[in-house]
Length: 328
Image 1: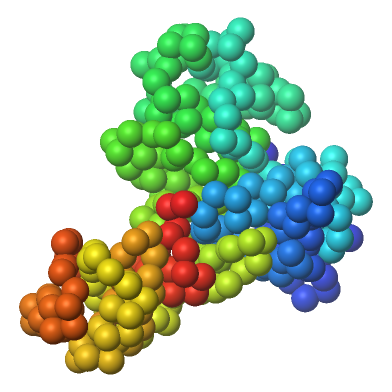
Image 2: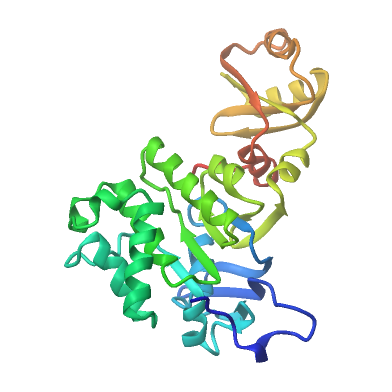
């Protein structure tokens, strides 16, 4: 059973995007602007990431797209269906995995899937077979009859994803899907999402883990203060800063002055930012850069207390755009 948007909502030329927002805005009481005029298009079959620090507006955006939060202004469409004007139709097209565990504790693992399918109109035979198939796909068959309270955090998260795709939604929304999971459980969930993607499932996920966005997403929108500050493929975003290496320098003294010195004296330096009591220096090429940084700092009276070098990441992109640490 595949649910699709009513034909009346589709434009004459082909299918509408999986998700589209136009000027989407949410203003909470107290003049708290959580989302500020968001324009997004998520194509069918892609994994699209909303990446940003806590409080950037990611969860509010997901809430508006899944009908849980009413926008203050603008519009949002899922599969061509207006989520505000027609929330009931929109809900048939979406699967949602929230940050909190919403599994039914009175049901077994298998029953959580079966009754979800029945709720969405699947017949008994289809719901039974699909629940069993999903337990196998999500590596939960051995826990079929267990109470959900007996599941580990990683298993519970996998079960929530399985439940969300039980009715084969057009778009799967994941809000911070691996928050609080151990590395092994996180990688296991990444593998599952990769399998769903191969099968053509459209996925929109929010995260503040840059590695997660880099690993999973076809495209990423970096959000800060409710606005999109950059949108591209992970490779495109990392290439946009013009540096392939980031040097982190910790030293005592005036770090703004040190930043200026390093930017002007280090060969290949493209940008520099002071964040979290350290200087982040973006450079092209890495050969000999660490000794050069130490020497330049010492020539100007700075004592370097810590020094590290890494490849450019999405966190580097975010810091270059906002001057903020992505993990705040």
